[in-house]
Picture 1: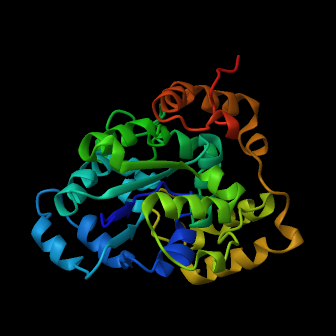
Picture 2: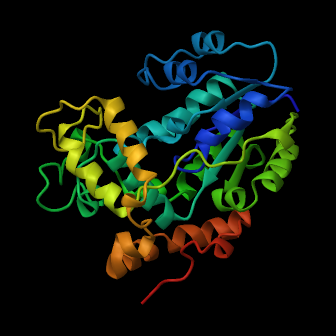
Length: 310
C-alpha cells in the first residue's frame, strides 16, 4: 500500500503520542512536519487554498504521513461551527485524492472532561457550565453564533464528520478506531494498526508511556485562579493582568500537578455531577447507536453512552 495516510484526530485521543513516538519511526513512509501541514491546510482561507501549491509544499519521495488533530477542527471554536472541519476534507482530497483517513474517537464524557481540563490548563478561566454552553441565554452571542464561533457539543457527535469523510474518500478509505482500544493495550493495538495500514517499523521498541497527566482537583482550581494573569492565546477567557509568561504557567502547573498537593483525579462523576452527567450521556446516545450499527465499533464495551438514562 502506497496511499498517503492522513490522521485527522480527534483531539485528546493520543495524537501527541502518535506524533512523537510512532509515526516518526515508520520505515516505509515519511512523517510530515506539523507546521508545514498546518500552514498548507489551515493557515489559509477557503478561497485562497491552492491544491497545486499545497502538493508542492508537502512533496516527499515516498509515502507521506500526516498526523494533525486540528484538521478535524479545534474544540475551542467547534471547528468554526464545523465549517472548517467540513472544508478541510475537500482540501485534503484535492491534494491526496487516494488518502487513507485515520480517525480516533473517544467516549464523549471522557472526551469532554479531558477537553475542559485542557482548556483550563491552557489559561482558560470559564466555569464548566459556561464552557459547555457558551451560547446559552444571556450570552451576547446567543443569536449570533457566526460572530464568535465557540465550543459546540455537536463537535463530539462523531458520526457527522465520519460520514462526511466517507462521502469524500469512500467508506473503505476511512479507518475509525476507539481510543480506548489503544489505551488498553498499546503494543497489541499498534501491531494491528500497523498491519491494517501497511506500516513497517521497530514498533516493539516504542515508548508506551502516556504523554500527558490529567489535572487533579486542586491543580484545576489553581490553574483557573492564575488564568487571568497568564499570557495564553485562548480567546474565550477572562484576562485581567497577563504578566505570567506562558511557559511559566505551563511548567509551573505541570510540576505542581505531579505532587500530592494536586488533589484527587477528576472523574466524570466528580466533574459533571449527576444531572449534567445524565444530560451529556443522553445527548450522544443516538449518535453512538448509529456508529455501532454502521461501523461495528465496540462502543458499549467501553461504556460509551448507548442507552438513555432516566
